[in-house]
Structure formats: structure tokens, C-alpha cells
Length: 449
Ligand SMILES: [Cu+2]
Image (cartoon, rainbow, N blue to C red; front, side, top):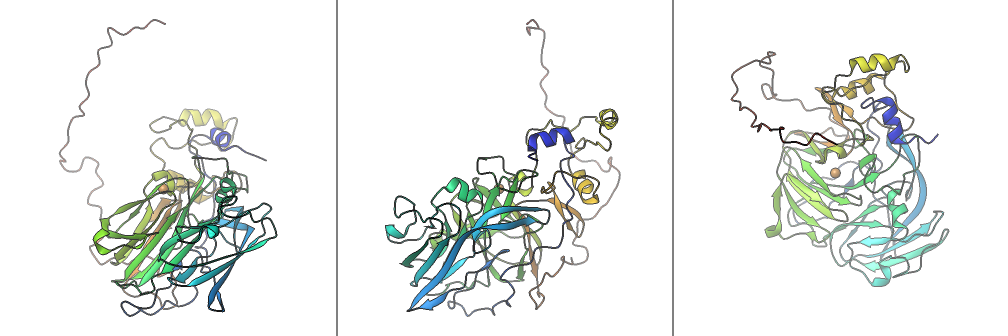
């Protein structure tokens, strides 16, 4: 049954928006199972990138050339337990595996098309001969279903890059075809990097009750993802106190995303243009990653559980309606009584805000159509996190578990948590101002037709 989101929301009432989804444990990392590398000596040994919820593509050496093999194919993808879709990706996943190489490497990427339509790969931000640039019809023939092509070029730069199709992009990007291409500097990092994370920003129109991302949507997306996952299925970034961390972020979504990090001011240190000279580094707490851009954010970790999220409030949520009547401040109890006679269990929410929403969805008495996530999700040590889409946590500990597993929640030093000092709303004598509202004279208004 094809349920339009709009109809569903209208029927349910303004804010009984969301289905219950048992938020299971975080999805298991694919490819992070190996132990963390020891801290490399300064100026040497390119670090290995950790692809959030993802993996790095293995290669083999063939006559001095690093040879990779990418396969474009339809895949079954889970955004978070309770929401999955038929997506298109590479080598079984969206995003596809991260390609890692070193400046100066000669690389050959064999590319097999197992999709039902033609495609190509564009190596986004990478300097190469025009015939390797992967624009179907312009720089090469389209790669038809069943064909394998070889791309081969020498890497003449370092930096945070991406790959994606340049054929039927409307469909192929909307269904999840994307990946990162990280090139490490040949000379090593001048300033040590202890942890190197990367992820891609994306958006999806996966309407309630459906299983195929809708490529026709331009703005009203249902899911906002880091590496094709929504919180709380997005892995946390695990870091030890004092380590220098780089977070490489690429944006192949259709919106710009102001990515905000708590706990530190970070430096914006690089992009497709490699790691910038220090004089170009900027100190920020929020950095806009524009569509088609990549940015590297670096910081020295301080202990705690720190939020890392998009600052567009709707992008830290999952599916929600955008064309609802605004229930805020509307007395709804009589209405509920009346409607319940026709629709048992009907309940509107939102009269005093939407935060109650997660309680209703988590407790299981509110459900929506199949294959839809609640707008909010995630539990923290102090209650509901009320986050859904582009949100995760940077967990910084003096010592991380040796097995690389999740260290649990931060244990705060005594006296360092904000605490309640009163339960009386009239507490204290806070300075206040009267709202400056200009009286309006209605006497000269035309009340006729
Ligand atoms: Cu955003």
C-alpha cells in the first residue's frame, strides 16, 4: 500500500507522528574490527582512515599498480533497525568502501556494473586525464550493465575526495551511490594525526511504507544520514584524551550542512585541496559542508561525551511531516475525546512541545506505517536524546577499552554536572523585561468585503 506521508500524518493527528521502533544496539562496524594502530611517529606513516559504520576497500599490487575492484549493484540497506531499503551502492554497501592510497601511487580501479542501467564513476576532486574523469557521454562511453571498465591514473595530490556516478545522477545519487577516496601525503603528516575518521553526508526520501528511495524529491527528505545511517545507528567516534583527531566529511546530499562539534573548537584544516598550510587553518565550532564539498576538522580531544551533529534542527530528525497544523499551545483534549469515538486510541500531541513524542514511540503504544523510524530516538545516561538523523557522539576517554569496543557513557567527576537547585517556577528574582509590543489601532481598518 502506498501511503503518502502527508495523508498519514493528517490521519494520525499532528504529532502522533511516529512509529515505535525498538532501537537496538548500534550496528556493528564493518571493517573496524582490527585493533587501532599504535601512535605513529611524527611526520611519518600515513594513518589509516576509519570510515564511520563503513570499511576500506582492499587492493592488490599488480606490476607496481595498486589495483582495486569496485562493483556497482543493488543492495539491501538498513538505516537503523526498523528502516531498510533497496538501495544502489558499491561492493554490498552504501556508501561504498573507502578507497585509500598514497600520493604518487599509480592506481587501477576495475569497475563492474551490475546495475539494471548504465553508469560511470567520477573521481571527485582528483587530478587526472580527462578520459579518466568519468562523465558519461563527455569523457567516456557509458558503462552498460554487465560491463567492466578499468580506470587508471597516477595520484598527484593528497586530500579528502569522493567518488560517485556521473550518469543518471538523479537516480544514482538518490539511491546511495557514493564513496570516499582518501589520498595520504607521500611525505607523511607534518603534524601527527592519531585518529582519522571519515563519513559522507546524505539525504533520502524513503516514504513511510515504501522500500525504494524516491529520486524525485528535491527538499523534503525523510532521512538525513552520516554514512547512510541515522542516529542511534551511527557509530560513536572513539578517542583517547589528548589525541589529535581528524574528521573528514564529504557532502553528496542535496543540502548544505552546518556541522557542529561540542567540547572543543576545531581547526578546519583541509579539503579536496589536501591538508592546507597552517596559515589557512580556521578556528571554528561549526563548519558548513556545502554540497559537493569536503572538509577536514581537526581537534585535540578532551574527556567527555560530546555531540557531533548537523545544526539544521530538521536534519537531526528522521521522517516527519512538514505540512502539519501547528499544535503548539492548542488545547486538544476535547478534540481527542471526540475523535476517539471514531478512532479508538487516537491521541494528538504537541500542545506543550514535541519532546513527549519519544516517550510515546519508545513505550510502544504509538505506531506508524511499516518501515518508518520515529522522529526522535536514542537513550543517554540522563534520558531521551531526542535526536534522529545526523547526530552522533564523540566519546573521549583517558583509556579506551583494549578491544576497541564502546566504553559506555562518560563518568563525570563529582560536582561537574549541572544540578537542580529548585522545583519552584517562581524561584529567585531573575531580571526580566516587559515585551515591547506596540498597541495597534484598528479603528481605521476596512471591515467590509
Ligand atoms: Cu544538515
